[in-house]
Amino acid sequence: MNIDKNTAALLVMDYQNDIVHEKGAFAGWGIPAHVKQQNAVENTKQLLDAARKAGIRVVYVTVEYSPGYPELANAKTPMAAGLKGGALIKGSWGAQIHDELKPLPTERIVTKSRISPFTNPALHDALKGTQTLILAGVATNFVVEATTRAAADQDYAVIIVEDCCASMNQQMHEFTLKNILPNLATISSSKEVISALE
Image 1: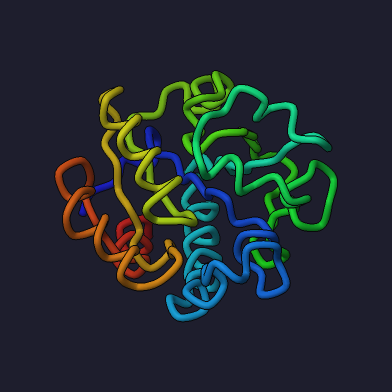
Image 2: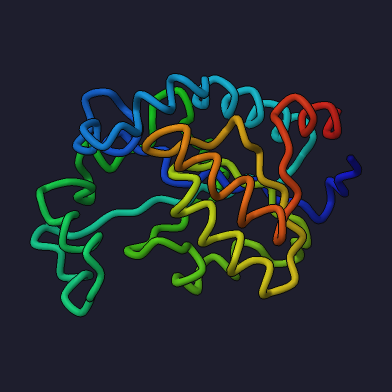
């Protein structure tokens, strides 16, 4: 695998306490359990270290809302309705990035209120000059898939780091990785990507 360090960016997506922490609001969805099964936090931490050492641009993506969820006033999806329970509120512990994966002061954070970060024009600015996106995120079949679809349509090369992603369970994780995303991206492992960055 060849990665041009000058034109690549690592996106670390939705690694927030409410989503991935065992005490988070969505623990009942099974996500923290699958994150643990995948060893996804530790794998992503190692990937982050390698990207920083290699000088790769790192961009964080988070999802958060104001109290009362005004950002979802026009949303029509069942998922949006399910979010309105006090989770992912700006400034709360639940909306914070997991302690093991905190961004450096120089690293950009792009927030969103929908599944795909490309719904925020700030992502385009954060990715100026980028040609290849390396994706780590939760959930595989939501933010990772949505980002891959949008990025592929905008002619980015996409590398999905499989063991830096997780979903509600292994079946959901594997379905999108085996049936959908190989048509749009390269599926890789943290070991392979880290090796390519060294």
